[in-house]
Length: 404
Image 1 (cartoon, rainbow, N blue to C red):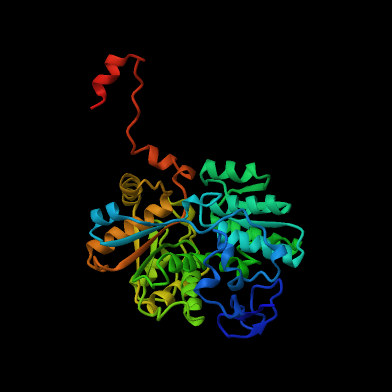
Image 2 (cartoon, one colour):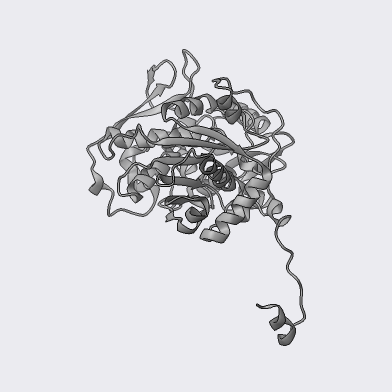
Protein backbone atom coordinates (compact mmCIF):
# COMPACT_ATOMS: atom_id res chain seq x y z
CA UNK A 1 0.00 0.00 0.00
CA UNK A 2 1.17 3.53 -0.78
CA UNK A 3 2.59 5.27 2.26
CA UNK A 4 1.61 8.87 2.93
CA UNK A 5 2.22 11.24 5.80
CA UNK A 6 1.53 14.87 6.68
CA UNK A 7 4.38 17.37 6.92
CA UNK A 8 4.27 20.90 8.29
CA UNK A 9 5.09 23.37 5.55
CA UNK A 10 6.90 25.58 8.08
CA UNK A 11 8.73 23.45 10.69
CA UNK A 12 8.71 20.14 8.70
CA UNK A 13 7.28 18.10 11.62
CA UNK A 14 5.68 14.85 10.43
CA UNK A 15 2.27 13.45 11.37
CA UNK A 16 0.21 10.39 10.57
CA UNK A 17 -2.30 11.13 7.75
CA UNK A 18 -5.32 11.74 9.98
CA UNK A 19 -8.17 14.28 10.10
CA UNK A 20 -5.73 17.10 10.90
CA UNK A 21 -4.64 20.19 8.97
CA UNK A 22 -2.59 22.45 11.29
CA UNK A 23 0.77 21.75 12.95
CA UNK A 24 0.46 21.37 16.74
CA UNK A 25 3.85 23.04 17.26
CA UNK A 26 3.93 26.07 14.97
CA UNK A 27 0.36 26.19 13.55
CA UNK A 28 1.71 25.93 9.98
CA UNK A 29 -0.34 24.19 7.27
CA UNK A 30 0.16 20.45 6.75
CA UNK A 31 0.96 19.04 3.30
CA UNK A 32 0.68 15.44 2.11
CA UNK A 33 4.03 13.73 1.55
CA UNK A 34 4.33 10.47 -0.38
CA UNK A 35 6.51 7.43 -0.64
CA UNK A 36 5.67 7.06 -4.33
CA UNK A 37 5.62 3.63 -5.98
CA UNK A 38 7.63 3.03 -9.14
CA UNK A 39 5.74 4.49 -12.10
CA UNK A 40 6.59 5.45 -15.67
CA UNK A 41 4.86 7.22 -18.55
CA UNK A 42 3.14 4.01 -19.64
CA UNK A 43 1.60 3.57 -16.17
CA UNK A 44 -1.07 6.18 -17.02
CA UNK A 45 -1.40 5.86 -20.79
CA UNK A 46 -4.37 3.50 -21.16
CA UNK A 47 -6.45 4.58 -18.19
CA UNK A 48 -9.77 6.35 -17.69
CA UNK A 49 -9.90 9.96 -18.87
CA UNK A 50 -10.31 11.49 -15.43
CA UNK A 51 -7.77 12.79 -12.93
CA UNK A 52 -8.12 9.47 -11.07
CA UNK A 53 -5.79 8.01 -13.73
CA UNK A 54 -3.04 9.30 -11.39
CA UNK A 55 -4.34 7.30 -8.41
CA UNK A 56 -0.84 6.28 -7.23
CA UNK A 57 0.09 9.96 -6.87
CA UNK A 58 -3.03 10.97 -4.89
CA UNK A 59 -3.82 10.69 -1.15
CA UNK A 60 -6.67 8.14 -1.25
CA UNK A 61 -5.45 4.80 0.08
CA UNK A 62 -8.30 2.51 -1.04
CA UNK A 63 -9.93 2.75 -4.48
CA UNK A 64 -13.24 1.75 -2.90
CA UNK A 65 -13.35 5.20 -1.24
CA UNK A 66 -13.16 7.12 -4.53
CA UNK A 67 -16.19 9.30 -5.23
CA UNK A 68 -15.90 10.26 -8.89
CA UNK A 69 -18.13 12.29 -11.20
CA UNK A 70 -15.62 11.79 -14.05
CA UNK A 71 -13.81 15.11 -13.71
CA UNK A 72 -10.42 15.93 -15.19
CA UNK A 73 -8.45 15.18 -18.37
CA UNK A 74 -9.92 18.39 -19.74
CA UNK A 75 -8.68 19.70 -23.10
CA UNK A 76 -5.34 21.43 -23.53
CA UNK A 77 -6.27 23.54 -26.54
CA UNK A 78 -3.58 24.75 -28.96
CA UNK A 79 -4.86 28.34 -29.16
CA UNK A 80 -3.51 29.42 -32.54
CA UNK A 81 -5.97 32.24 -33.25
CA UNK A 82 -5.69 33.75 -29.77
CA UNK A 83 -1.93 33.27 -29.92
CA UNK A 84 -1.76 35.16 -33.20
CA UNK A 85 -3.87 37.95 -31.68
CA UNK A 86 -1.54 38.21 -28.68
CA UNK A 87 1.72 37.54 -30.52
CA UNK A 88 2.47 34.03 -29.19
CA UNK A 89 3.47 31.05 -31.31
CA UNK A 90 2.94 28.27 -28.76
CA UNK A 91 -0.06 29.21 -26.64
CA UNK A 92 -2.23 26.58 -24.96
CA UNK A 93 -5.47 27.02 -22.99
CA UNK A 94 -6.08 24.45 -20.25
CA UNK A 95 -9.85 24.49 -20.42
CA UNK A 96 -11.27 23.37 -17.07
CA UNK A 97 -14.61 25.02 -17.79
CA UNK A 98 -15.81 21.68 -19.22
CA UNK A 99 -15.56 19.69 -15.98
CA UNK A 100 -18.86 18.11 -14.75
CA UNK A 101 -19.78 21.12 -12.56
CA UNK A 102 -18.04 23.47 -15.02
CA UNK A 103 -14.98 24.52 -13.00
CA UNK A 104 -11.60 23.24 -11.81
CA UNK A 105 -13.04 22.87 -8.30
CA UNK A 106 -14.21 19.36 -9.21
CA UNK A 107 -10.59 18.30 -8.73
CA UNK A 108 -9.97 19.33 -5.10
CA UNK A 109 -13.59 18.71 -4.08
CA UNK A 110 -13.45 15.14 -5.39
CA UNK A 111 -10.27 14.35 -3.47
CA UNK A 112 -11.53 15.94 -0.24
CA UNK A 113 -14.97 14.27 -0.31
CA UNK A 114 -13.34 10.90 -1.11
CA UNK A 115 -10.94 11.37 1.81
CA UNK A 116 -13.90 12.30 4.04
CA UNK A 117 -15.40 8.93 3.14
CA UNK A 118 -12.07 7.24 3.93
CA UNK A 119 -12.05 8.94 7.35
CA UNK A 120 -15.63 7.85 8.01
CA UNK A 121 -16.98 11.39 8.40
CA UNK A 122 -20.75 11.84 8.43
CA UNK A 123 -21.07 15.15 6.53
CA UNK A 124 -19.08 17.50 4.29
CA UNK A 125 -19.19 21.17 3.38
CA UNK A 126 -17.17 24.15 2.23
CA UNK A 127 -16.72 27.88 2.35
CA UNK A 128 -17.10 29.11 -1.20
CA UNK A 129 -17.24 32.00 -3.65
CA UNK A 130 -19.48 29.80 -5.81
CA UNK A 131 -17.65 27.19 -7.87
CA UNK A 132 -16.55 25.08 -4.93
CA UNK A 133 -20.11 25.09 -3.60
CA UNK A 134 -21.32 23.31 -6.74
CA UNK A 135 -18.37 20.92 -6.91
CA UNK A 136 -18.63 19.91 -3.25
CA UNK A 137 -22.41 19.54 -3.42
CA UNK A 138 -22.20 17.35 -6.55
CA UNK A 139 -19.62 15.00 -5.02
CA UNK A 140 -21.57 14.91 -1.75
CA UNK A 141 -24.70 13.94 -3.67
CA UNK A 142 -22.83 11.16 -5.48
CA UNK A 143 -21.33 9.93 -2.20
CA UNK A 144 -24.54 10.20 -0.16
CA UNK A 145 -23.24 12.87 2.22
CA UNK A 146 -25.19 15.74 3.77
CA UNK A 147 -23.52 18.92 2.50
CA UNK A 148 -23.34 22.39 4.09
CA UNK A 149 -22.30 25.38 1.97
CA UNK A 150 -21.21 28.70 3.52
CA UNK A 151 -21.01 31.47 0.91
CA UNK A 152 -21.31 35.25 0.69
CA UNK A 153 -24.85 36.27 -0.25
CA UNK A 154 -23.76 38.28 -3.32
CA UNK A 155 -22.34 35.43 -5.43
CA UNK A 156 -23.78 34.82 -8.89
CA UNK A 157 -27.29 33.30 -8.95
CA UNK A 158 -26.42 30.44 -11.36
CA UNK A 159 -23.85 29.19 -8.84
CA UNK A 160 -26.39 29.26 -6.01
CA UNK A 161 -28.96 27.47 -8.18
CA UNK A 162 -26.41 24.83 -9.17
CA UNK A 163 -25.39 24.02 -5.58
CA UNK A 164 -29.03 23.92 -4.42
CA UNK A 165 -29.91 21.54 -7.26
CA UNK A 166 -27.54 18.94 -5.83
CA UNK A 167 -29.43 19.12 -2.52
CA UNK A 168 -26.98 21.14 -0.43
CA UNK A 169 -27.88 23.10 2.67
CA UNK A 170 -26.88 26.56 1.36
CA UNK A 171 -26.14 29.20 4.01
CA UNK A 172 -25.90 32.64 2.38
CA UNK A 173 -23.77 34.75 4.72
CA UNK A 174 -24.37 38.50 4.83
CA UNK A 175 -20.68 39.37 4.50
CA UNK A 176 -17.51 38.62 2.54
CA UNK A 177 -15.95 35.27 1.64
CA UNK A 178 -13.62 35.69 4.59
CA UNK A 179 -16.65 35.97 6.92
CA UNK A 180 -18.14 32.80 5.43
CA UNK A 181 -14.78 31.04 5.75
CA UNK A 182 -14.46 31.95 9.44
CA UNK A 183 -17.96 30.64 10.24
CA UNK A 184 -17.41 27.43 8.26
CA UNK A 185 -14.14 26.77 10.11
CA UNK A 186 -15.74 27.11 13.53
CA UNK A 187 -18.80 24.99 12.68
CA UNK A 188 -16.72 22.34 10.89
CA UNK A 189 -14.40 21.90 13.86
CA UNK A 190 -17.18 21.91 16.47
CA UNK A 191 -19.42 19.44 14.61
CA UNK A 192 -16.79 17.20 12.98
CA UNK A 193 -17.89 18.10 9.44
CA UNK A 194 -15.34 17.67 6.65
CA UNK A 195 -15.08 21.27 5.41
CA UNK A 196 -13.20 20.46 2.23
CA UNK A 197 -11.15 23.66 1.93
CA UNK A 198 -10.54 24.13 5.66
CA UNK A 199 -10.13 21.09 7.90
CA UNK A 200 -9.70 18.79 4.85
CA UNK A 201 -7.42 21.28 3.11
CA UNK A 202 -4.24 19.17 3.28
CA UNK A 203 -5.93 16.56 1.05
CA UNK A 204 -8.14 18.97 -0.89
CA UNK A 205 -5.23 20.88 -2.46
CA UNK A 206 -3.88 17.61 -3.84
CA UNK A 207 -6.69 17.65 -6.39
CA UNK A 208 -5.43 20.86 -7.96
CA UNK A 209 -1.96 19.44 -8.62
CA UNK A 210 -3.57 17.21 -11.28
CA UNK A 211 -3.67 20.41 -13.37
CA UNK A 212 0.11 20.00 -13.57
CA UNK A 213 0.00 16.24 -14.22
CA UNK A 214 -2.43 16.59 -17.12
CA UNK A 215 -0.64 19.50 -18.77
CA UNK A 216 2.67 17.59 -18.57
CA UNK A 217 1.13 14.46 -20.08
CA UNK A 218 -0.75 16.43 -22.76
CA UNK A 219 2.53 18.16 -23.74
CA UNK A 220 4.12 14.70 -24.11
CA UNK A 221 5.94 15.04 -20.78
CA UNK A 222 7.56 18.37 -21.62
CA UNK A 223 7.83 21.26 -19.15
CA UNK A 224 6.08 24.48 -20.30
CA UNK A 225 8.00 27.77 -20.15
CA UNK A 226 5.17 29.97 -18.82
CA UNK A 227 2.12 29.11 -16.71
CA UNK A 228 -0.54 31.77 -16.15
CA UNK A 229 -2.76 30.92 -13.17
CA UNK A 230 -5.74 32.87 -11.79
CA UNK A 231 -5.25 33.36 -8.05
CA UNK A 232 -7.81 33.68 -5.25
CA UNK A 233 -6.55 31.86 -2.14
CA UNK A 234 -3.36 30.88 -3.96
CA UNK A 235 -3.83 27.16 -3.27
CA UNK A 236 -4.11 26.21 -6.95
CA UNK A 237 -0.87 27.92 -8.02
CA UNK A 238 1.00 26.34 -5.12
CA UNK A 239 -0.46 22.91 -5.93
CA UNK A 240 0.45 23.19 -9.63
CA UNK A 241 4.07 23.87 -8.62
CA UNK A 242 3.97 20.84 -6.28
CA UNK A 243 2.58 18.70 -9.09
CA UNK A 244 5.39 19.55 -11.50
CA UNK A 245 7.99 19.00 -8.76
CA UNK A 246 6.56 15.56 -7.95
CA UNK A 247 6.72 14.54 -11.62
CA UNK A 248 10.37 15.55 -11.65
CA UNK A 249 11.02 13.63 -8.41
CA UNK A 250 9.65 10.41 -9.94
CA UNK A 251 11.61 11.00 -13.19
CA UNK A 252 8.62 11.65 -15.45
CA UNK A 253 9.84 15.19 -16.20
CA UNK A 254 13.23 16.78 -16.66
CA UNK A 255 14.30 19.84 -14.66
CA UNK A 256 11.27 22.04 -13.85
CA UNK A 257 13.30 24.90 -12.38
CA UNK A 258 13.20 26.90 -15.63
CA UNK A 259 9.41 27.22 -15.83
CA UNK A 260 7.91 30.59 -14.90
CA UNK A 261 4.78 31.02 -12.80
CA UNK A 262 2.43 33.99 -13.29
CA UNK A 263 -0.14 34.87 -10.61
CA UNK A 264 -3.15 36.67 -12.10
CA UNK A 265 -5.52 38.61 -9.83
CA UNK A 266 -8.36 41.08 -10.44
CA UNK A 267 -7.99 44.76 -9.59
CA UNK A 268 -10.11 45.33 -6.49
CA UNK A 269 -8.88 42.12 -4.88
CA UNK A 270 -5.19 41.74 -5.69
CA UNK A 271 -3.34 41.58 -2.36
CA UNK A 272 -0.72 39.16 -3.69
CA UNK A 273 0.04 41.39 -6.68
CA UNK A 274 0.39 44.39 -4.35
CA UNK A 275 2.85 42.52 -2.13
CA UNK A 276 4.81 41.25 -5.16
CA UNK A 277 5.19 44.73 -6.60
CA UNK A 278 6.35 46.05 -3.22
CA UNK A 279 8.87 43.17 -3.03
CA UNK A 280 7.25 42.21 0.28
CA UNK A 281 6.26 38.83 1.73
CA UNK A 282 3.50 40.44 3.79
CA UNK A 283 0.12 40.04 2.14
CA UNK A 284 -2.15 42.79 3.47
CA UNK A 285 -5.80 41.65 3.34
CA UNK A 286 -8.37 43.47 1.19
CA UNK A 287 -11.31 44.02 3.53
CA UNK A 288 -13.96 44.80 0.90
CA UNK A 289 -13.16 43.12 -2.43
CA UNK A 290 -14.62 44.97 -5.42
CA UNK A 291 -14.39 43.06 -8.72
CA UNK A 292 -16.61 41.26 -11.22
CA UNK A 293 -14.33 38.23 -10.75
CA UNK A 294 -16.24 37.07 -7.68
CA UNK A 295 -14.66 33.61 -7.66
CA UNK A 296 -11.30 35.31 -7.02
CA UNK A 297 -12.65 37.78 -4.44
CA UNK A 298 -10.74 36.32 -1.50
CA UNK A 299 -9.43 39.30 0.44
CA UNK A 300 -7.24 37.31 2.83
CA UNK A 301 -5.65 34.57 0.70
CA UNK A 302 -4.66 31.58 2.83
CA UNK A 303 -1.72 30.65 0.60
CA UNK A 304 -0.73 34.21 -0.34
CA UNK A 305 2.69 34.10 1.28
CA UNK A 306 3.45 30.76 -0.35
CA UNK A 307 2.47 32.10 -3.79
CA UNK A 308 5.04 34.88 -3.35
CA UNK A 309 7.67 32.26 -2.48
CA UNK A 310 6.74 30.27 -5.59
CA UNK A 311 7.02 33.38 -7.79
CA UNK A 312 10.52 33.95 -6.46
CA UNK A 313 11.44 30.28 -6.84
CA UNK A 314 10.24 30.17 -10.46
CA UNK A 315 11.22 33.70 -11.58
CA UNK A 316 7.59 34.62 -12.05
CA UNK A 317 5.36 37.66 -12.03
CA UNK A 318 2.15 38.77 -10.34
CA UNK A 319 -0.14 41.11 -12.26
CA UNK A 320 -3.73 42.35 -12.07
CA UNK A 321 -6.44 43.23 -14.58
CA UNK A 322 -9.39 45.58 -14.16
CA UNK A 323 -13.05 44.89 -14.94
CA UNK A 324 -12.87 46.26 -18.50
CA UNK A 325 -9.74 44.25 -19.28
CA UNK A 326 -11.41 41.12 -17.86
CA UNK A 327 -14.55 41.56 -19.99
CA UNK A 328 -12.48 42.29 -23.11
CA UNK A 329 -10.44 39.13 -22.47
CA UNK A 330 -13.57 36.97 -22.02
CA UNK A 331 -14.85 38.12 -25.41
CA UNK A 332 -11.44 37.77 -27.06
CA UNK A 333 -11.10 34.16 -25.90
CA UNK A 334 -14.67 33.37 -26.95
CA UNK A 335 -14.32 34.94 -30.41
CA UNK A 336 -10.92 33.41 -31.19
CA UNK A 337 -11.11 29.93 -29.65
CA UNK A 338 -14.82 29.29 -28.98
CA UNK A 339 -14.18 29.00 -25.23
CA UNK A 340 -16.58 30.88 -22.95
CA UNK A 341 -15.08 31.55 -19.54
CA UNK A 342 -16.24 33.23 -16.37
CA UNK A 343 -14.36 36.36 -15.17
CA UNK A 344 -11.64 34.31 -13.38
CA UNK A 345 -10.53 32.91 -16.73
CA UNK A 346 -10.80 36.41 -18.18
CA UNK A 347 -8.34 37.56 -15.52
CA UNK A 348 -5.70 35.05 -16.62
CA UNK A 349 -6.12 35.89 -20.34
CA UNK A 350 -6.05 39.65 -19.60
CA UNK A 351 -2.89 39.32 -17.51
CA UNK A 352 -1.30 37.14 -20.20
CA UNK A 353 -1.98 39.87 -22.78
CA UNK A 354 -0.49 42.51 -20.47
CA UNK A 355 2.72 40.54 -19.89
CA UNK A 356 3.19 39.84 -23.60
CA UNK A 357 2.69 43.55 -24.35
CA UNK A 358 5.32 44.37 -21.71
CA UNK A 359 7.81 41.91 -23.24
CA UNK A 360 7.82 39.64 -20.17
CA UNK A 361 6.74 36.56 -22.17
CA UNK A 362 8.66 35.65 -25.33
CA UNK A 363 6.66 34.88 -28.46
CA UNK A 364 8.27 31.43 -28.76
CA UNK A 365 7.71 30.39 -25.13
CA UNK A 366 5.45 27.37 -24.61
CA UNK A 367 2.75 29.16 -22.62
CA UNK A 368 -0.15 27.53 -20.76
CA UNK A 369 -3.02 29.76 -19.64
CA UNK A 370 -5.43 28.20 -17.14
CA UNK A 371 -9.15 28.84 -17.70
CA UNK A 372 -10.88 27.62 -14.59
CA UNK A 373 -14.65 28.15 -14.89
CA UNK A 374 -17.51 28.37 -17.36
CA UNK A 375 -18.97 31.68 -18.56
CA UNK A 376 -22.56 30.54 -18.09
CA UNK A 377 -21.98 30.73 -14.31
CA UNK A 378 -21.49 34.51 -14.40
CA UNK A 379 -23.33 36.18 -17.26
CA UNK A 380 -24.63 39.29 -15.43
CA UNK A 381 -21.50 41.41 -15.77
CA UNK A 382 -21.00 40.38 -19.39
CA UNK A 383 -24.55 41.26 -20.49
CA UNK A 384 -23.75 44.94 -19.97
CA UNK A 385 -21.18 44.93 -22.79
CA UNK A 386 -22.89 42.57 -25.24
CA UNK A 387 -25.13 43.84 -28.05
CA UNK A 388 -28.85 43.50 -27.34
CA UNK A 389 -30.56 41.16 -29.81
CA UNK A 390 -33.13 42.97 -31.97
CA UNK A 391 -36.56 41.38 -32.04
CA UNK A 392 -37.85 41.22 -35.62
CA UNK A 393 -41.07 40.14 -37.30
CA UNK A 394 -41.04 36.62 -38.72
CA UNK A 395 -40.69 38.04 -42.22
CA UNK A 396 -38.07 36.53 -44.57
CA UNK A 397 -37.53 39.72 -46.59
CA UNK A 398 -37.02 41.96 -43.55
CA UNK A 399 -34.67 39.51 -41.81
CA UNK A 400 -32.78 38.77 -45.01
CA UNK A 401 -31.98 42.48 -45.26
CA UNK A 402 -29.99 42.39 -41.99
CA UNK A 403 -28.14 39.11 -42.75
CA UNK A 404 -24.99 40.28 -44.49
